[in-house]
Length: 322
Image (cartoon, rainbow, N blue to C red):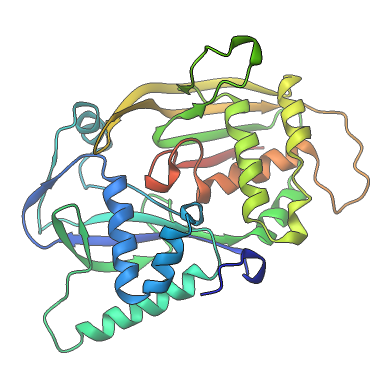
């Protein structure tokens, strides 16, 4: 497989909803993002080993994300289980789900072809296990681009740009971000005056922690004809000048347990007010700073934000109020 990103089409973004059913009763740790990532790569390896090797060995984990296994339990019970690290009971009579986002256009047809091959192997035989998450084996019930929770779908970079260009943003416009899985930001000390200060995990969704990171993801993922539309330095200055103000929030501290360590962060929603930067657009092809923020907020639906979105942290979506 050609590993040069310059030779690949990067325009499409997908958020897939995989409906699963456990083969038998068992238990699974409440936050299983690491296990799901490994299981997904193992499944891809079985049908497209060169793709799996390219994603894993080439350190291309930034081209997809996997959620933790989603249980039919209520969100409150799931959060309690995550906080206390109480394993979830699996029941073959219930269905479960995993969310996978594909941030490279070519990954979708590769996944689709692998899925067709998997289905052909099932014809005329007993249903084959689809994925092993940890020690638990699951059957595949359905793959879709829609889900009851509205966390599935697809778009393109060109669609994101067109929507942002058409968005009318005024002084009353509010941008709300919903953080549905544990979110935190790995902050490295770069202050030469305080060299002894250690790195830390920031547990508040401050604008400086969110939008410059999304701007970097745009530069990494967007086709060349769109990369110039996002100006990371101007966005950082806009934030420094208090252009983005936290208007309201409903956040709560949370923690999960990975295989080898505990991770603290937060969940909830945060409302941002985007102030008028009094800028003059040179032509209709450019985006104002507020339109750039709007675009990046919608990109976050696919990329996630903050620390370790590839294993299910930082799942985020934008709720826009014009």
